Image (tube, rainbow, N blue to C red; front, top):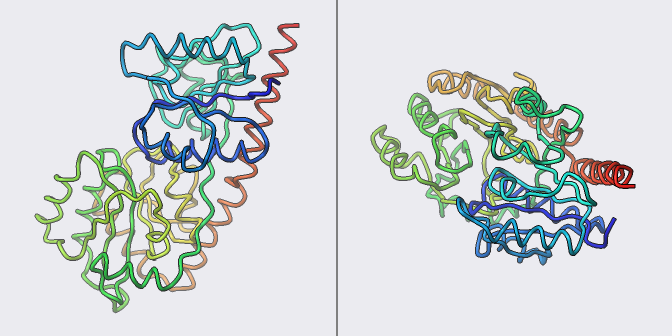
Amino acid sequence: MSTLESFHIIGSRQFGGADQFYVRLVQGLNETGHHALGITRAGSPIAQALTEQQLPQRHLPLANKWDFITPRRLQRWVRSEQPAIVQTYMGRATRLTRLPASGPTVHIARLGGYYKIRGYYEHAHAWIGNTKGLCDYLVREGLPASRIFQIGNFVADPAVIPETELAALRPQLDLPEDALVLMTLGRFIDIKGFDDLLKAFAKLPQEARGRPLHLVIVGDGPLKDSLHALCQQLGLDGRVHWPGWQNQPAPYFALAEVFLCPSRRETLGNVILEAWSYKKPVVSTRSAGALELIEDGVTGILYPIQDPAALAGAIQELLTLSDLDWQAMGAAGEQVLAKQHRRAAVIDAYLSLYRELAAQRERISA
């Protein structure tokens, strides 16, 4: 391999779960001694995060539509530095990355969703999906199965939050000292189903287990105003709390006792993995990702998508369980995380695939 071993290209201006995973992966690869260069949009939250972690990066326009600069400049960098791997994330970066089928560099497109393939992904040399369902989808879309690889995600290690910080967080959120806290996290967009969650929460009693029942929704996005209006319409003001977007949500995971994932579509569900890292019991829709992750009744409770009444029933079911049952469910989730989504195992899988594909390319070129 060349000294500069891999380029990692992403065009997002968001900082959601997929973007945070990108930063974790680039950081993890560099920590092994593998030189992974981040290529991002200048001024994006991802670029800022790489800077804060002191990770190597460069910038390209990675524009939505007409962008002649990105492909030409990237091709020049590849010819000059000959990285073994160029890995692209999501549609924009993949569409703008055009490398020859022969030569020293392999283009891998890494997908974290059921995206449109034609016109965006078919020109890559290999593809990574983070779930079995997604890899099966890529095969159905006509991509060669022999060049499709499944590698899961990993999440950040759980942070130890001092009790004093948790105690201070409750009054900041206007939470009663004895509140039983349900929590969710994500961008305020339609597929996350936060309106379903609010409707479900309105069906629950104001107290559970002899304690006030409260909901913390961590996030932000284009549906913020409509969600706040729905909350008020349902009479939930004072019981639902909105701390906004948090790049470091660890204190909220530590504070909560139950994690809720009401998504209408979730390819994997990084938030479920994060909740498991804090040993929290999870209630989730039967999204594609949750069905691969969760064993119903063992590592979480599943309910039908876009069904507020069913969600309310699933939460009620969980609330009737004992503290020991909650602990067992959270611990079972953490075990799945440790076995299937360990940081070291995921990074090793990427490095092994890079070596395999680079060796194949060298044999073809010889």
